[in-house]
Image 1 (cartoon, protein in one colour):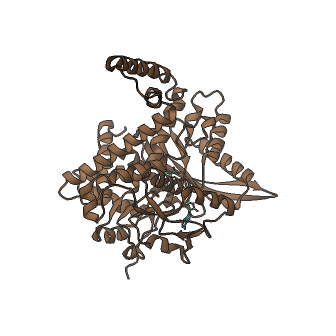
Image 2 (cartoon, rainbow, N blue to C red):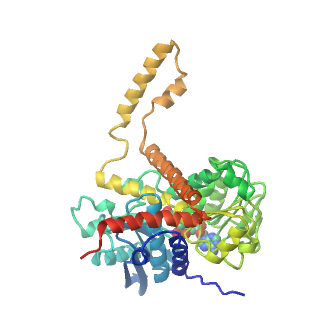
Length: 472
Ligand code: NAD
């Protein structure tokens, strides 16, 4: 049996090379685009109870062709330098795919957050932030972290506060990190942005009847059977929007505590309550516990959404995957050898560097909001209401009929921040999908969406490097 290389850096590198073969770009330039520009490794002590513990952390800045660089911070026992570098590279390509003007970065601390108290996590996060500040690996114009696996808006607030303490009076300090609580300079819609973007991306893929016919499915999301691996920020929100707005049937869900299955569909709202109450997904009313959680990936379904970790669909299980669409909400869930098998089976893979880009898209909006020091919509909301109301009243006078009061209210309502954020995200996900799909259709040799997405990204980054030149 072939031994598969599961090193994420190798995986990303192979994906890059596969796309680069289709492009007329100089080898030296390709090498520069692919290389990780800088990695900072740090070990620091933190007092936990009455002892000291030394933690290992990293921050990788993959590409500075656009600044600041941007990417999440991961807390996991499995974090290592290679993984952080690979995830930073994915961030560079992702930003290019959705036209977010940032380079890619990623950070992480090797720890299992479930093993620490909140006050310990706060001290660890603040010390890690102080280390990043010392070496210039964080700042509104240099490097802007965000949440990732094992971190959330709570950690982002601690990071913002620590940065502020080191830069008194800095008017743009809040823009040093995104994914903050709304009350701390965050933006409405960021928490759910990645999952919402996953929904928009899958919905866009399901709007193309020809593509769906090729994988043996009908157009449209309603009634499609979906399995979601991971029930954290991305998994939960993906499942929620696919069920509520896409009218999909979520038939299987898993997280670190186990996997459950109900072919008739699961209520995501009730499952979330069950998870909070019992601290596990298992024993959910009406659902069957899977004895082997890995079985979840192999369930009979239309769409499989891996939303947990990398290397989940590998040579070991690819042949047993029955989904017709694999929608990569997580980073790096499918290995290259598994992908070959899936593509041969005619499975449509919606790639991570496109599908989970909703998070960084709304982070970009948050960063812009912090630098402008004003909530989106604040200046124009009332003006738009007045203008629309005047237009509607004139129309009523002309046609000698009145709009029903409810419709009038809806039409005349000026946009709130959440409306602006969601429509910006929706537009971004739709146009990026179309650009990737058009690239694939126009090329005679590119046959899958991932290769097309990489081709789109590499071309944009190459253009930036050519225009900038090389210093000195
Ligand atoms: P999270 O920590 O909120 O949730 C992770 C989930 O995965 C949890 O439910 C956990 O129980 C589950 N999990 C862990 N190990 C598992 C296993 N072996 N089997 C099944 N489930 C398991 O993290 P998140 O922010 O939702 O991130 C999930 C993925 O999405 C990661 O790959 C991350 O890099 C990617 N991502 C996150 C964002 C974001 O905005 N948070 C943006 C882009 C990509």
